[in-house]
Length: 190
Image (cartoon, one colour):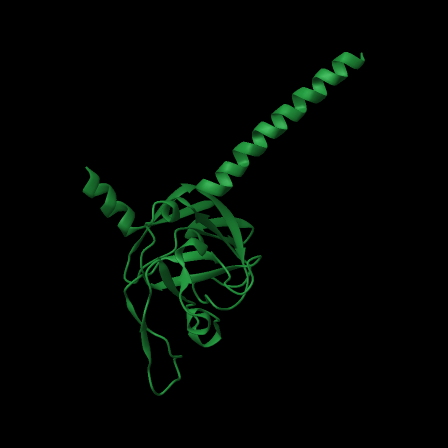
């Protein structure tokens, strides 16, 4: 009896460790769901929105201007920030606020990115703490999950301006919107 209990316990611990390792690798290298708080990305991402942050783009250095990213805060490494990439290394960016009369500019140094919130008047971003190292980027936001009348609506965020959204109904309660650039990249590969 004790031997059967011991075998079941060891088997359970083994499966738990295996699935824990798989979950860790998925969250670390594929992506994760993140709950965003604060007004800095309004109206694109509002307070308590849930987004999916994929890590593949970061690992392959495919972050582009206009992408929304999750990054470690330069002030508090335990906190994540959600901002839009406004400049990559070598780009000239405006460092002054929207209400400043005199505009100042700087260049983004090598290995860094310039991040700004969509709500410029209510955002602490690179205009406050300067460019951040590329290594602080955790992932690129590619999905936003919204709750509408007790059903979930999932859609891909418009990363860059003037991208049309296509609508497909997959299930009665789920609607998925895809960006035009996904279709154009599929056409280019064929």
